[in-house]
Image 1 (tube, one colour):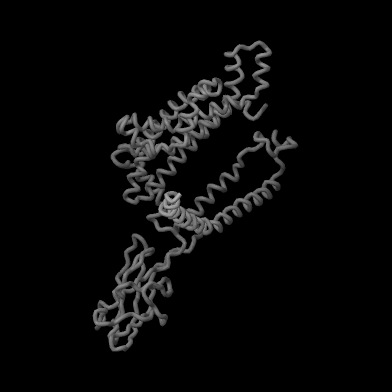
Image 2 (image 1 turned 60 degrees about the vertical axis):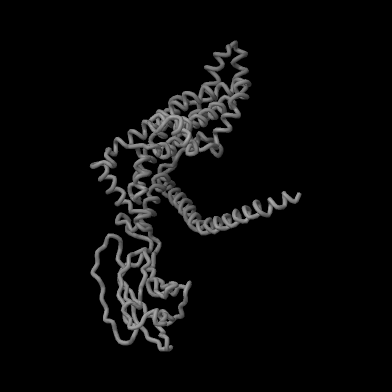
Length: 454
């Protein structure tokens, strides 16, 4: 009992306290995001109501769904509203442009302060005498060249200062570097703009704030605004310009087309291999008690393991060539396809199976004409999920010493903070993945026209 108490006090209690602190920090972040989520939901609802009014003015819809008396809960009656899709995409780009100062949108969120500003400070010397001086700050934007600023030093032992600063960056100001006396002589800054200041506190000034460092210097931080710094989120036109540049000149000794084709090749091969093994395995687990008992622990054990955790083993077992990358994507798709096929078999309506047997069908005929057709909707759903997971895993797969690929391009760019290339790669992966998903939907609609109809 004493050992358990000691373990609780030395190990478990500190761990729980640390987790509680992290949970509180997470709660603060979530609470700060709630107003933005509410605003976004309000935008969705407002756009829906507005489009409903516009669509009502255009006349009633005339199709098969409009003839149904009950549509809620009927999946076959739900179709993606194209207007909602267009508005959603436009809203994303408008928000993107608003918070990056893009020239493509006519209105923007408040940006960082750029220009000239000033504040005064008060210095007290060792004898208790005080003197005031002015600091003029010229804040320049990113990639902007401006002339240096000058100011008359003024009278008294505290001299005026002129400094250059960059937007989104604080600037350390050694106010005593041109004064007649300095910190070593017992002088100290006591006020900024007439407000008392001490170490660890900030004083709000026009277009920014001023803090006092431990060594007695002033640290000016210009107003940042709501816009994102280009190194964190570049404007849409910057990403487009980078896309045109890489499409013409390539990146890391390979063309953009080569990067995308190699990523697509790895994803498709890994997915097809995973489907080729996973679907028969899922059918076997759904039709045989022995196969279900044999493979169920393996599948359920491996399913939660993320592909990233398998990278070291893949490198040890398969090396750093293409085979290792394909194996990683194969494992990412395998378990999803297995579970989808097993769920498809388990979800077959038993009355259809009994009806087939009553008509004299053999086991092979039941499998071919009843089980496989009725399990295909689940398999296609799993295939779409597996393809999305493979696209998400390709970045991790191309960490294994890849020389070409969209994931490799993103990872190399992130090391040098080339955020425009990172976003470009993410957009291209998303567009290609969405295109593949559309093709799979069309294939499902063609091969499984009975989906949603009993």
